[in-house]
Length: 233
Image (cartoon, rainbow, N blue to C red; front, side, top):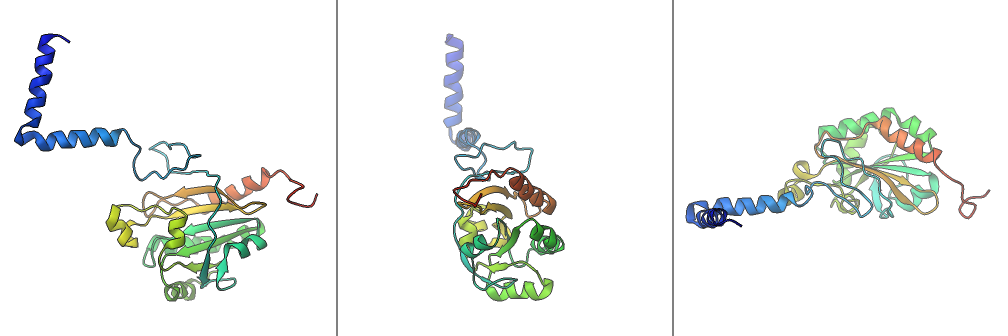
């Protein structure tokens, strides 16, 4: 390195380490560290590639879905388990909701209700999971008369097991209405149950279209190859 360049580097480091600039140095170091990692809002599994920042996340995973048993304020048995759902249909679409008060969540379940017959025809069950009390889930059911299960997950444990995203760190984890973001998960329940597709919202309004979820189920049906070890040929 030329002498002039070496002197410039030495003087720059000395200035940054002086009292008025120590904060700048720390910010620079932190910024470089953050630039070397993907944004924390991207939740990735080993089989999921980094999505384009300009596109909504639309991740496909191959993983075993966690089982659950939750009180059901909507249609179907109460409580409802994933094992029961698996015995009834080939596909399940889990809508991981944000909060009892969330207007986007309320609108979403009403839109799904308008398409319920299409999902039934595709041998798919829609299951909404509200991270709130059973009494509040009953209040929703009385308001919207949903023809699909509406499960109450008071502690948000099942939603967390399905990696529902949150924002704003500890504050977001403390208050669902502030931090919890929506997520949709498509389960393929034929043979060994798998998480076939998931969509994580980065904002309260970032949700997949109902038609897109239905198309996902149809694509899975079309791509199914019969395995005589699993079904009768």
